[in-house]
Length: 317
Image: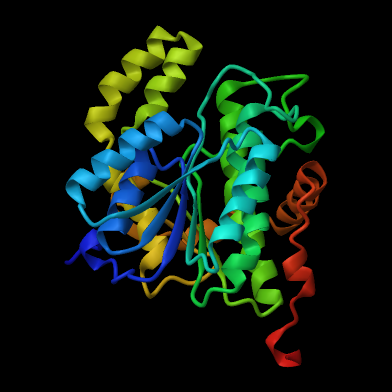
């Protein structure tokens, strides 16, 4: 049986891609793979020094890589708006948007706008970025939005305490943000399809990928138990960032992908392996919750996805 790998990514010459969190982990592996196939990759990163180091490492292995650095702090709506405005001013197309960046299981903090950090960065920041970048996506034939969720999603969105002001759990807040990522991907696909838009929305998760997220989470909490668990558990069942990035790369580039899919590793309880669509993910497509989350996200970010309101179904064009 053949497995899908980066060798199966088609030629991406002439395409423009934006990857959030492109300087490390899954984002770095994704950027490297896309650049190797000829894409112009916009590396949207919070720390530009680390982004420059990542750019240099990619260029060393992919000498003809076409890379562009832009500043993006997903914990600041002002930064998200500045990033999107810069991209819209300098590009006339956007083939792929990878909503990849994230923080995991950190002590309670708030974003610049007063949101709980994990919900604010992982979900609201990407919700705003996608909505602001939508004009470019809609103008690009075959464009896709790939949003990264997690096996650790909780399945719940606590609307009565979204920001953990009354009760906060590091892992609960992370799980909520990753559930929000998945529901956003599903709801975005519904709204794109309803207006006849050519863009599709898919979700992907890496299984258990050994990235800096685990060490950063354990370090921020000061938990010795977590540090030991990640150190021991990771090598046993985890996989490399390059393997962990395959599901989102598949979601972004494979020809058989349809809007509304969730792609994850196909082996060992979804923790590792080569990418595979997960048909059972539709059980998690709670449409009333997804629609409510959308409305709340619009209210919190001020990004209303106006281009979709202006679009019309294909039948009426």
